Image 1 (cartoon, rainbow, N blue to C red):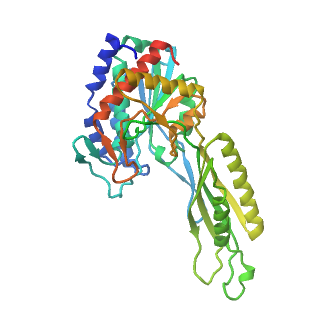
Image 2 (image 1 turned 90 degrees about the vertical axis):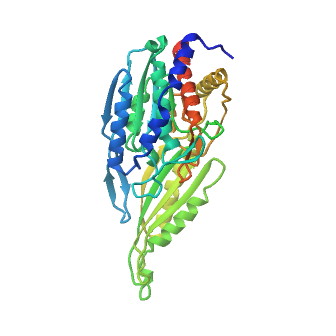
Image 3 (image 1 turned 180 degrees about the vertical axis):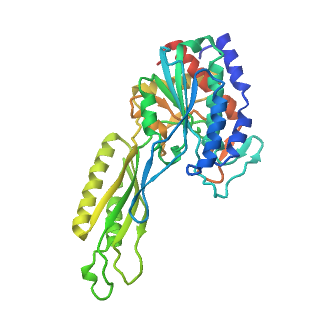
Length: 402
């Protein structure tokens, strides 16, 4: 255990005094579902204003276009909200990346829109933990860092994207660009209610597989048809059979079909695959192409595969272990027990780790039941996690990185 210096004490008190709860309540009261561009615009403007108290340049960045396959098998392009970017001291010897997301999984017409107190110190509401609470923690920690003499030694990029909940397709390129040359990264997904951090994460790929068959009369000449729905069902079963330790497969939906008296000529299978390691991902990719080709031949249909592994697997390497140990050490000095374990979820930490940058991606407050109407934030953890982040940043500056 290390004794905190006078400068560290002063900076941590600055973090504790930040108006984090008020910020969470303001931001979470605005719906910012990934497809709610008006709500995202409101939140992005508020965030840009708040983060402008830090030195450096704040900008709203246009998103990259996002492709998807509609229910007719056509590729459509959709728009996401702008991302917020802050760059501070790009010439400092130590460079850090901090990321968060302003979007939630709750659309503008979702019934879960209000904030309520479940009990003393537990706030229920959309995005309170995931992750408007995390953004408030990040801002408090960076504001505290700026009060310390060590701040001059550390520069950072902050990216708060608008589409993390749907896979960061409109921001992945920007994340990769900002990750270049960084010593470490911190991402502000919520910690578990007991404070445990996410360690290793699997990868994730979402695919839409379009199957074109041939229509025919279901009674008069079905043999002349090629049943796209039946091919999709066969494809779904064969993909599901790939499940094993190291690979999760979830065929989630089949669009297509039509009247009972017509052999269906179109179906679209939506499927998610989660490999644990890069080797598992390569195996899954090869199996996906092989099975698509086999179904195409067996059913006399045309199969088109759309999608990719947008979240690469995130195993814990030696550099990541060093960053986790630093966070643990900072926690010990603050009286916070810090542990971590593997999780089945994915986030922007996957993309950062794939760039070779060590990342701890659950630096946000403690909370739970995310992606549900029971989502909650443990309010006391705002201060504890802001101090943890601030001390981690200070120690990175003091140590000259990892």
